[in-house]
Image (cartoon, rainbow, N blue to C red; front, side):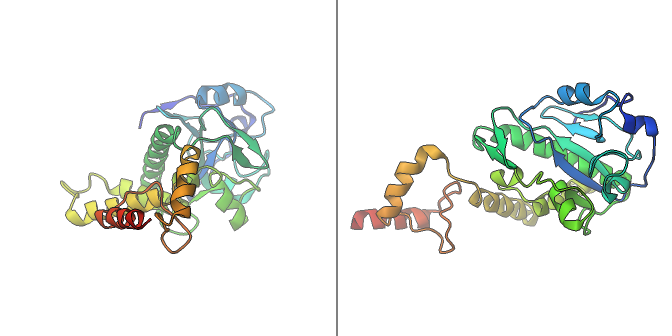
Length: 262
């Protein structure tokens, strides 16, 4: 993770200069198809902007925009806001280009095309959160410590926004997974060699589980409809077909067997 500073010294939040003792980290996304953090910094580094976060996470770098112990305006509007402004460090994940929003839902978002972008953003978010948790002695697995804006609303500590749950699940990622990844990132390097067989198996199981939650692409819709109608692909019994996961040899021969029977 490449970290640089561009403090929003012209923003009213910075000028007021209230401080906090960080008790957690809140993850946001910008809610607009703009991958360049410099665009937001240019828009926010001025008076009369009733919002301010501690950092922007881009694909290639993280830009710190407030001192970590300064009270941000991210969980609500202006000087009042919601209580997470008093407790949580905040950062915005920049979204890729090419989509719009309708009622809080991403429209025209291509998860497969944006997979490389998302994975780099996600890793930067994990590394930043792990760094902050280490610096301020926070346990990301404790309730309410590492949360997104949507979770903050459910907890009553943030305004009514859906981020990042309008975006990350499209890539098979949940906030519980994020917290686990942050916890693991905090321990990286603590041992000379912590990549045991058990650790590898855990990572692989996690990766495979994430792939089962990925949505199939529109391009394969006719083939999928045919395969399901023919009974070649029968699903997993829970209403899912796991089209983006890998087929075992056992599953492959079963599909061939069903095809031969047709």
